Image (cartoon, rainbow, N blue to C red; front, side):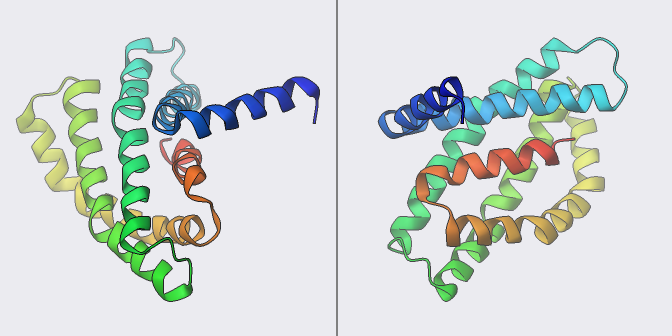
Length: 171
């Protein structure tokens, strides 16, 4: 690894150790913003919609990073940091029946009302129409990521893994 990259990684790891919540929030926001830039380009948007990108960054910084940070701490406390097969299955199940539906619903509300600026009545109709499919799709994909995360990834890197996977999911 080049010395600049190695220094950058070491600095990031130090920040993650010294300021885990802040580092995870900034990472989640950065990846949400980058994901939206890629999404806009892939969908043919010629001029980047900066407000949309900023609102995605805010969602990552204000919600995704902090929520994931505390969720994984709580899950590790509930299950005493165990990583055996039975415990990981329980963590994944708990995550999928609690935070997954909540996260998808909250994102749909935020995206519809804040990012797109649509009135609640339209957002509510879209949720009623699309939420079951979105949640079902989420339940077919995210448990695998959750399994990998809880079984193999150290606690301090779990939000980062989720943010990296979500980077590809957002578009």
